[in-house]
Length: 236
Image 1 (cartoon, rainbow, N blue to C red):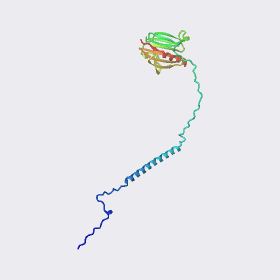
Image 2 (cartoon, rainbow, N blue to C red):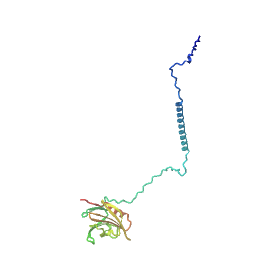
Image 3 (cartoon, helix red, strand yellow):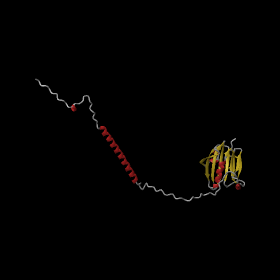
């Protein structure tokens, strides 16, 4: 007779249920990466903190070289200095100055109240009409000023400068404006006197304004400049 096979029972613990999923194994890389990132941040922060500390330490210990050190003196209050007042009167061509008017050539100017003038209409050697006005202090007119400081205004009816003696042996020193007209200032000196000329052309006429003085008289020069400043041409 054949023998029957014996069926040995399998323990329940060893019997795996069919179809049950195995749990996945977790990898450690994310945690390691996070730890490395934190360590990098801590290292970077510590490095910059150390560099900032060293910089502040160097700045606090810095001493400028003697050549660059600047000593700023403490300002000392000083007493106010009174202004010097010039007692010399300023000539003002306003109230007591007279007015000269020429209807032929249509110009006017002012001159000091204690001055006089003389007019002379004549012709030059070249038969050119001209007007000469002589101005000087009243005490010098006896009957005509000679050898004294004076001012002359000459109007010549020509623009041919070669025929006028004022353009000979004189040189232009600067350009000025008189009555809205550009003029040239000239100078000439001799052994006895200094001459100053202002020349310009207007309406076909040549104007020569001359200052003659035998010394560097400041008053005379001021009067000459102020007469020039009041010269104007009338427009009709």
